[in-house]
Length: 222
Image (cartoon, rainbow, N blue to C red; front, side, top):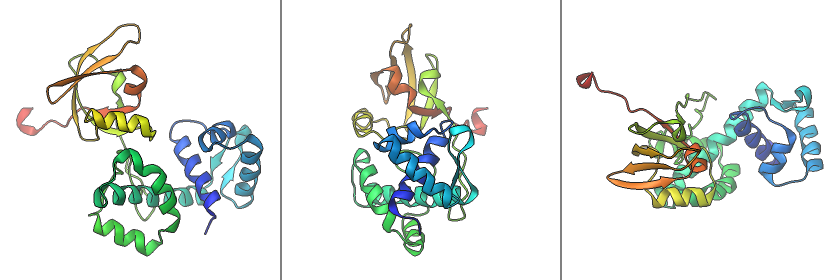
């Protein structure tokens, strides 16, 4: 089983790869470590067959991807446990889940998943990889891309920053929340959204991280 450090790197590389090319500098910034430390650890990962270094970047091999998905699965199940069972606020669970994820055996993962009634996503809306390594596709576009009058549903939050999540929680903006875009200010100004009849102004940077989708239409409404 990979060490905790290796698992942290694999998880970080996987999450960064979902947003584009992975470079050593991005890994260093995300993990808060020095460039030389990242270079040395990437060497260990490459020797273990977990990554390749195309054109100075970083890419997971098949074995690296499966190892990364395993740790992501454990992390997101741990987050569900902390929120759904222990009642912790969603902005407080990321770091705690980082500690728990390294201790969950395969048997505990299966039991936990069954106890939680097979959740499909973490509290922040990100898909939980299945035991066989498959990952459900997560659709959606940033809220900032919608025009006034649009009615959408929050799918996920693309940032687990505690302050951001705490702020969104205070506005009742969670995955599954229905949102109406009431107004969009010009020149990259804020968006005004309506939730249950209450209006809130959101900066573009915040709206960029709220991923939404149009609600499914019932057959009767078509």
